Length: 515
Image: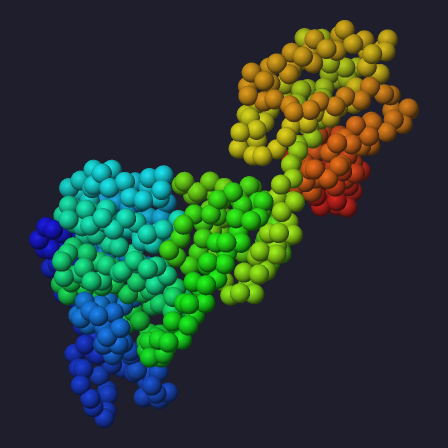
């Protein structure tokens, strides 16, 4: 490790901290007239102990560390922010962390205008130590590592953490917010060996006290003194200190709750893989489980509709298709499993986009409304871009549904229809857009064919129960397209809702929306 003075920002090292009344006098007295406090409403009229010595004494006893090695903050987010402010010069210094991991490291870095570098974990969600250390050049002052990691749940390899501590010359922060749920020993026992180590813990997780906002940082007394120097004077209020002391004095209650959570974690780890919507559960050392499912977005939304909230992590690095599920009480976990089991059929159902042709994909010829020549083939602007995005990013089958009045009769010969139609399909395929099904009704309106939109005669296979029609869409420019959406029980996207009948349908059917 570099000399601490060389790591700390010069202005922080040289600054004189704010001195409060409670810093200047720490003894006992009968009359306090030094801090401009209200003499009434005791004890809450008095400013709290700015250094929380009584609370730190109890924490030191439980954790086996010196009081002088403890910093207490407003959640763990406060020491995270203070560490960056103490060691990183804005616009000059940098931070390295891992991805995926706890998002507040990056937020705090951005707030402080400090470059944040992310190194992807390996395929087992473990440290790529060589890449991490390679990224930690002379301008990197701090490395943030979360173990057990959030959202992956696993402990990072202890040997790899040791390598980082032994090699990196700056500050290494190991965030142990979930350590109480793990059988791995805490790095608190390593503080004397590594003067560059800061360990973060919290009252929010195993202690069940997220509401009181108490985070703990453990480090050498020299580093703790730097954090105390730049913190706000009374950063931990009296109510928080009192409640934390009460909970620490009743440690057996926490231990009882911890045993329940660990037991329920085992139960969920056994039950979740039995569900057809679950593809994989990842090993966990935390109070949550990262679960890969068949359709994360759909499952998440269906759970929300049932009043069950999990965390959708599908857009997080390396967590595509994953939900993060916190271990709850037995009845809460029962409700989760029941909801997943009840809706497993929905999760496995397919979704479709029923797309009109003329007036939606291609411009409808204004005179005879027949696309019967290559000269008439003109695509709508942005249709390639929009459909390609949907095809690549979303899980929908593409179904073309079109009325072609009298196709195959003298009024609309097939030999003029197919060349333009086939050219349209080949052009779309060339842009990465392929239709899974093409349904064409040839009847005239006066025939009242059951196959003609908005009737559903052509769509029998999509009404068999295999498709999630409630989350499927009809896209079109005509009233009949939106009536088809209503008949299917699907949602509608209306490209031209510009008349009174259209407005009435929009009012009556909230599943239909104008594009």
